[in-house]
Length: 545
Ligand code: ME8
View 1 (tube, rainbow, N blue to C red):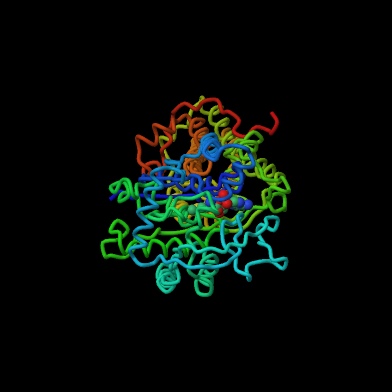
View 2 (cartoon, protein in one colour):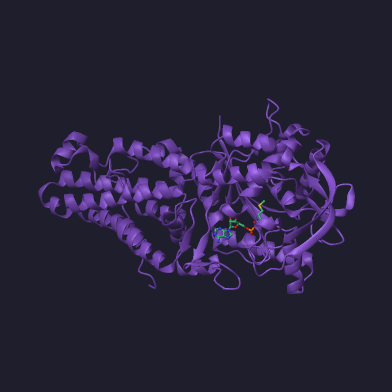
């Protein structure tokens, strides 16, 4: 059966332009979507914008534009930014769209039918920055929101609808217990487990329309608007047909992976499953065959960036525009930096001198140089072609020639193991570990970019050619073929660079993908001996050239 992969990013607030924080999550989703597409899985990658919030209203007022005009303009900016950066999303959902309204209505009514919505009066502080209520214990010593200390808290005294989230506390804890990878990485699971145990209370899920102009009206009660988070989470369903196209919904739901930042795990890992558990009781579309709720498979929460050591914030003016950044470096370089520099899941720092260092060392010196040397030597010694290896030496003969033990043999056996590990890392969202392995290898295998460079240094094809043409041919063939594999291994992270490597090996990346499935592509020997090698182009020119 064909496997499917449905991956989402948060839908972003559009009171400002995209910055590298939202870019990071969206690039991560792009990488995972590309890795699944390459592996032949039916893939759907969703991103979009969260528009029914107070923030939108305030930003529109500040800009002097009518709300609708403002939202349309900003949503275009977000969508176009991702397009310009080459991100391969399949759909862009806006929560102001009709299809989303329909989904929210259906969902609300299912939850209502389950008896999980009630009205209550309360008085609490609301932070527009978080679009969330704050209990006293969540405030800092100045009684302000620790995440948005510059924003005044709003004292809300209202009668609103509440969602009986607390009724699902045990079921959610059971879910965490049964499905250990529901929340990744594990430290986030610990965090959210303790939140659910200690502080998972009923949520207010509406505001009075006369006080809050944003939001979808509560079905059957125009005097109330649905709370932005209750509405926003449903985007993951409305984009795949919930409320508008049952067949489409059955095809894609449940989502395989919600990618989010660590700031919003409470909503994704606790509120969202509770909402689905409730709605599923009265909506067969949300039930598995055994009647259990169709929950997303996994939520992966990554860490937060600082910029040159400082928190990214509007007041510091240090939010980096990804389109500006893409003028400084090819965007593939930034993609590489994001996932090579920072363990995916941990916090990290966006630091220009580190980008420059990684560009020079990992990319220009290690990857670019290896490819260039191998192509130049092959062209020079073998008439502009991939060397012929008609009488291919066996592994034992090959190792004997160079006095090497099996650990640094660059060939078929070690390659299969390496690919298995790479596939596993992409499947578990550990993009950082995949890159680490490709560049550094493991203690057991020199099959890595650093290992290949060392191999050339040791074997010295530029001297060997004077003594033994056959052995030189095999050495160079091995390195060129290894570069072809590296190109496919890094394809999800650096799609453009990957293409350029394949072209420089005289192949067409498109025809290779369509002619062979991924299993074939991973086999040793895909590079045709005797085929033409074009003159190499510099992959990573000196910056500023
Ligand atoms: O929370 N480092 O939207 P939002 C890394 N609309 N990632 C960062 C970051 C940083 N410094 N800053 C932001 C919302 N992000 C809601 C989501 S989903 C149903 C509704 C990323 O515009 C990260 O993914 O505030 C974080 O979770 C998200 O942007 C918050 O985006």
